[in-house]
Amino acid sequence: MEIFTKLGIDWRLFLFQVVNFSILLFVLHRFLYKPLLGILEARRKKIEESMAQADAIARSQKEADERAAREVKHAQEKAKSIIEQAIDDAEKVKDGLVKKANDEAARLIERAKKEIGAECDKAMTEIKREAGDIAIAVAEKVLKEEITKERHERLIKETIA
Amino acid sequence: MEGKGLEIVITPEHLFDVFGMPVTNTLVASLGAVAVLVALAFVARRKLVFASPRGIQNVVELVMESALGVMEEVLGDRKLAMKVFPFIVTVFLFVVTANWMEFLPGVGSVTFFNGEHTVPFLRSVNTDLNVTIALSVIAVIMVQTMGVAVIGGWNYAKKFVNLKSPLLFFIGLIEAISEAARLVSFSFRLFGNIFAGEVLILVMSYFMPLFLPVPFMLFEVMVGLIQATIFAGLMLIFVKVATTHHEEAH
Image 1: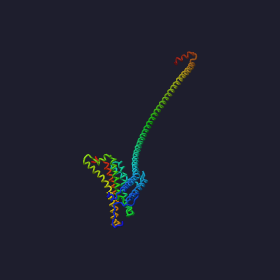
Image 2 (image 1 turned 60 degrees about the horizontal axis):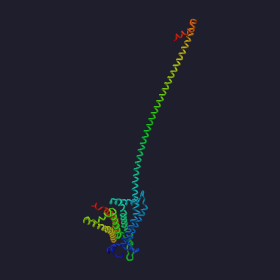
Image 3 (image 1 turned 30 degrees about the horizontal axis):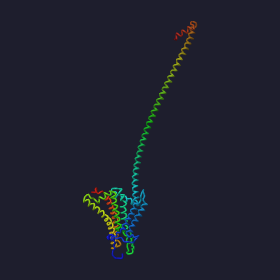
Image 4 (image 1 turned 135 degrees about the vertical axis):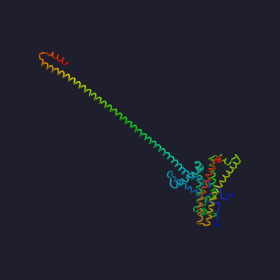
């Protein structure tokens, strides 16, 4: 064991160096490596998460855009169909009104014609009666005594009828 | 240094005793290295932020993350990499800090009278075999533990004791010897390099104290970094070897 002494090897000094290094190892591990590697790891995770989040946001943005476009298209189609429906309805209403007005007009014309006819008939009868009377008066004047009134009337009637 | 010649001592110089514990100049220096790193760790801890790091944190994060990346790549397993990370990085930081402290003014030049001799108060930490052997023992135990933890005690033991054939038995024996040899190579490589550097600079200073040592000091700064890298790198590779199934390796 003389060689150990000559090389300066002493178990107490050796042990001291082991302890010394162990303390250094502990302190560096506790106060440098662990926090530092923790930070690196956490940062790596955070970056990964952020990337995933960004992807998700972009995806949902795209989805929302697509949905909005779909909605707009749908709404446009619906508006178009509503307008068409309205035009259709209006057309129908217009047709109905025109027909009604025509009917009314026709009815009014018909009634007016009837009334005119009736007036005409009435006027005719009146004229006939007046004409008879006038004829009687004229005949009376002409035939004074010859023919009695009754006979004369009968005669006129025969003539007219 | 009363003598005229160079005084090169392979052992750390004894300064004084504390409760029967001999205190050497390398021990004081190693406490200094630990204190520096602990202080830095506390300062760094307080400045760590989650979002938008600035300045030094970026550098620290870059270094730590690439170190972890290398470990993950070599071991092929993030969880295992996270487990060995503290050991390997701490060994690296400790060795490189200790090696570079050698060039601080005062290390080696401030002296202390220990009752018999006048000796330097501080001495480069890794020129003490107690330190390098302690690091090696911790490294080897860590490697063995990881081996047992990952491939299981039975599988791990089979690497060293294999009775299936004489050839495999001998391979196991060689494995066991090489495992023990690691302890020696780990500790003496670091010790030898740093001690040689010290001696080199001492010799150069002896020739010409003013300018000549400068390029050698620069070189030794490199050596200090390289030795720390080698120590940490070998730890990583040994973990890889220890956690690999032998059957598959053939």
